[in-house]
View (cartoon, rainbow, N blue to C red):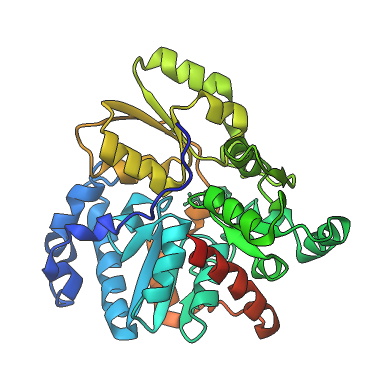
Amino acid sequence: MLDFDVAAHADRAHADRPEAFVQGLPDERPAAPALGHLYARVAKHITPAEWPLIAREVEAIERLKRERNAVVLGHNYQAPEIFNTVADIVGDSLALAREAVTVDADVIVMAGVHFMAETAKLLNPSKTVLMPDMGAGCSLADSITAADIRLLKERYPGVPVVTYVNTSAEVKAESDYCCTSGNAVKVVRAVAKEWGVNRILMLPDEFLAQNVQKLVPELELIAWKGHCEVHERFTPQDIRDLRENHPGVVVLAHPECPPEVVAEADYAGSTAGMADYVRDEKPARVVLITECSMADNVAVNHPDIEFVRPCNLCPHMRRITLPNIRRALETMTTQVEIDPAIAGRARLAVERMLAIS
Ligand code: 13P
Ligand code: SF4
């Protein structure tokens, strides 16, 4: 089953967090006992010996969040010790973009990659958006420039441009609409109808465009050669080997994977789509063909499900750490700024997407 029209998923990491933790704890209390209830959520990844150090970072971040009136947005690929502790809002790119609009805070810290922080800033121009490590990029965002889009528009006049949210603000500014993996099918269908066309430039992820193309045979999607360096590494043989070695395993794949990989999967969807599939279908044994911290985070809420865990890590997501989140809040750096001449047009593309989805 392929379904990229998935709803953004809720803030699960927060749902069972005791009030005492959300409200904060006096600084003089010993870190580990005070936050002991959180340890259960990260126990598979953090040893008891490591925990006191981590708990102290978490306490410091919680105190700074209160002082700065800040929230931390955490992408589903964040390390468990971030996702399950300091992240106030967690989800896929679409959920984070949506939540960024409604968030009641003066400061947003992005525990994710740079394009996600830019999107948060586009939708919250009056708020301070902090990026704990400006080097947290994305191979897809790096694969295309605003000049490339201008050239494509010259080559394909009158063809609407839909760009994946994994792009820079400059690229979004040259685009007519944004999309995410969670709403790509819905967006291209709506754009085709609105513009009265059947050709759409869908950039820059070649595999996402090819996977969406299969679901909209009535349209012609023109792709670019960008790839996600994490998802392009999976092969159809990997899936066949997983099925052989783990009989009965249900295979969920992200649509940034090559189409031959998606064809071998039981379901393809955004990170939120995969989490929702696990929650709703409760497969006895499952493998998520995506960045591997995702399985760690989903597994916390499903102790009865066996997760098979091949591991492809995103080096950009891994640049975000508890110490650099703390430093960002202490020093209020690095602030994400977008040239106003670019921001207005880029915001329009994101807002058009949100209006559709
Ligand atoms: P999602 O929108 O599915 O969360 O994906 C973002 C991403 O970077 C995937 O590699
Ligand atoms: Fe970019 Fe791929 Fe990393 Fe997602 S997993 S941030 S698409 S490099």
